[in-house]
Amino acid sequence: MEINRDQLLQMYRTMQTIREFEIRGTGEVSQRAITGSVHSSAGQEAIPTGICSHLTDNDYISSTHRGHGHCIAKGVDPKRMMAELFGKVTGTNKGKGGSMHIADMSKGMLGANGIVGASVPLSVGAALAATRKGEDHVAVAFYGDGGTNQGVVHESMNLAAIWKLPVIFVCENNLYAESTPVEYATAIPNIADRAAAYGMPGMIVDGMDIFAVYDAAGEAIGRARSGQGPTAMECKTYRYYGHTSMDNPQSYRTKEEEEEWWARDPIKQFRERVIKEKTLKKKDLDVIDKEVEALIEESVKFADDSPIPDPSELIDDIYDNYPRDQFLRGTHIEI
Image (cartoon, rainbow, N blue to C red; front, side, top):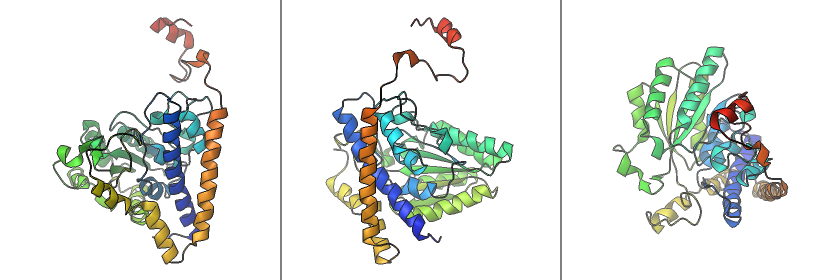
C-alpha cells in the first residue's frame, strides 16, 4: 500500500513516542517505588503503529497488560498516561487504574487489561455493537502468545466468525509468556494457522517490519469494513526487556537471541529504509527525535506536578450511575 510523506512522519513519531515512553516511564515508576507492575512493549512498536494507522477515533481497540504502545498508537495523550502511571488525578483514569488499566473511550481505547486474554471479548462486543447499530466501525483485539490458549479467546473468535463481525484478532507473539517459551505451551509453530478452524483468514506477519504490518492490517481492516468478517493476524515480535521491568532477570533467553532481535529493531529498520529510498531525510527524523524527547520530559513533569486523588473519591467511578449510598450500604463501608 502507498504511504505518503506525512503518514511516514507520523508513523516514525508514533514508534519513537512509544519507545521513549516505555523506557522513561518504566524507569520513573521504578525510581519512585510506585506500587503496580509496568510492562514495557519496547521492541514491539511496529505492530500497534502499523495497525492503528488505518483506524479512526470511531474504531475500537482492546489491549493487554503490555498496553502503552497500543494506547499511544490509538491517540491517547502521553501526558495523561504518565500521570496514570504515577497514580495522579490527571491520569486517563484519575490515577485509579495504573499501567494495566489505561483506557480512553474518546479515542476508542477500550482499555488495557491485566487478565490474560480478556481483551478479546471486549473487541468482539464492540464489533457486535457496531454491526447492530449499522456503524462502519471496526474493532481490533490485541493479545499475546500467552493468551492464545485461553478459552475465552477461542469462544470469541468462533462467535466473530459465525456472525461475520468486523474485528481483527492480533496476536503479538513475542515468544515468551513471562518466561515460558511459546513452544512449551502451543503445539503448532504458527498461531495464525488456527484461524482456519474458525473459517477466517490467518496472516503471519513480521512484527518488526512496520511496512509489512501496515500492509497486512490494511487488508484485514478492509475485509472487516466491507462486511467480510474477521481476520486473525499473528505478528512475530520481541520484547527487549524483562516481563515487568528492565531489571527483571532474563536467564530464560540467550544473549545471542537478544542480539539477533535487536539487529532487526523496527525503528532502526524504518530509518534505514526511508533514508535509503529518499522518502524522508535524516534531518526530518532527527527533528522528531528531539520533539518526542521534549514531549516525554513534559509528560513526566506534568505527572509530577499533578495532585494525587482525594481519598473521598475512592469509590467514585466504580459503577456507572450506581447510587453511592446503596453501594455503601451493600458493602458496609464507612467513610
